[in-house]
Image (cartoon, rainbow, N blue to C red; front, top):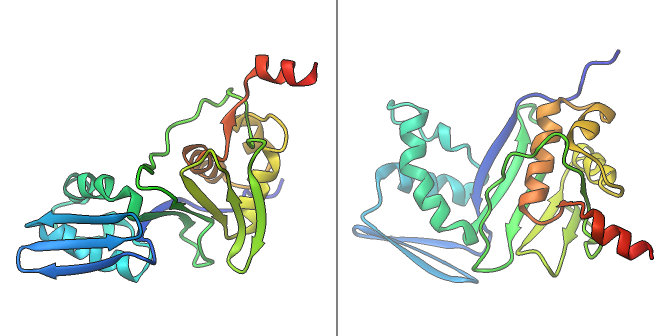
Amino acid sequence: MPQPIGRQPLHLWSLSEDVIVRATGDEVVLTGRFGSERLSDPDPIVREALRRMELGPMLPANVGTGDGEGSVCLVLLPTLSRISHMTVRTLALDDLKGPLLSVSPESRQATFSPEELSAADELRLPRDVKVTLEDQGVALESAASLHRVVLHRPEAVWVVAMLAWPVTPDAASQALPLHPEVTDGILRYLAAAGMAEPVDDDKDDDARL
């Protein structure tokens, strides 16, 4: 039996391309298409994280201070949550082949928090999702979603193709030649972005009548 493709998924953060960061004294101001955010006297960890996020996707745990990953996350997460509408979330693998997918905010109200999925819950691609081919990959958009998703690698496209019909995370993992954690990570990002929704049996029954 062939070995599953993929390694440990990496959860990365970067600033949207339109966001400009200006530091003045003890204040850092972020300005983008959805307005501005002022951070008063931010921790040095936050300043370093924002510097790296301007350059591209970064792993929060790598903003090292010698205090450990938990301490870094405790400092960073409140700020990252506050600027969620200015942040691109990227799922990648540690294989140097580029990101799997990225999720960009399309509204100031956009928040992004991948949640655990039940292995037995059926999911599917929402019917109103628009799929377009772009230079960076396959883009997914929906009028009902506050996010836009770009699939950068075939592995992410494979998972989305499974959602053409109702499928459980467990069934998708068994059907695809990917490590289960990779399939699960892709599904969690799609669900958080509104590009994978729980199947409503009653609604589906009504649609067939």
